[in-house]
Amino acid sequence: MEPMGKVKPARRFRFVTKNALKRLGVFFGLIGVMFVWAYFALLLMPGRTFSGDLPPATDRQKELAAELNGHVTAWPRRSGCAAPSSRGA
Image 1 (cartoon, helix red, strand yellow):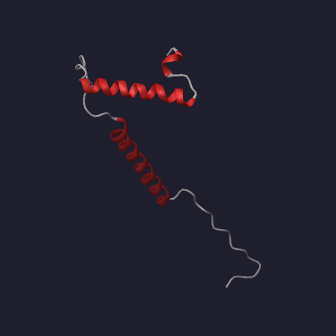
Image 2 (tube, rainbow, N blue to C red; image 1 turned 90 degrees about the vertical axis):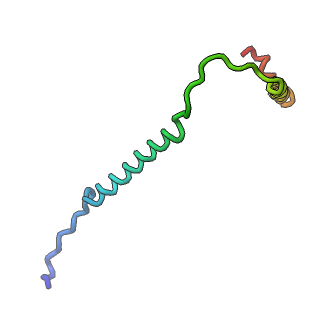
Image 3 (cartoon, rainbow, N blue to C red; image 1 turned 45 degrees about the vertical axis):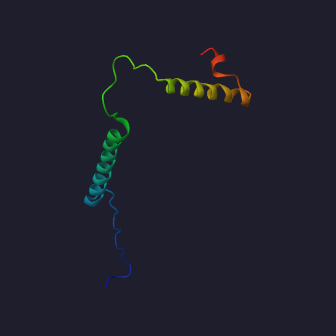
């Protein structure tokens, strides 16, 4: 038992411990693995770049292009905006 007048020194809180450094290493390692995964899964394009002339469009592709162009130009007219082709772009 200690005397009544004596106060024990407070125990210092340590921020940098071996366990804290291990946790930080695991955390940053996981962040690194996530960046590598994101590069390969989300950014890296598969296959090779196409080079050369495109094959001619089929009749069905030409019909679809005309139909889609009609939808793209009709929607702004119905909503009160100018058609995309009238903007001069």
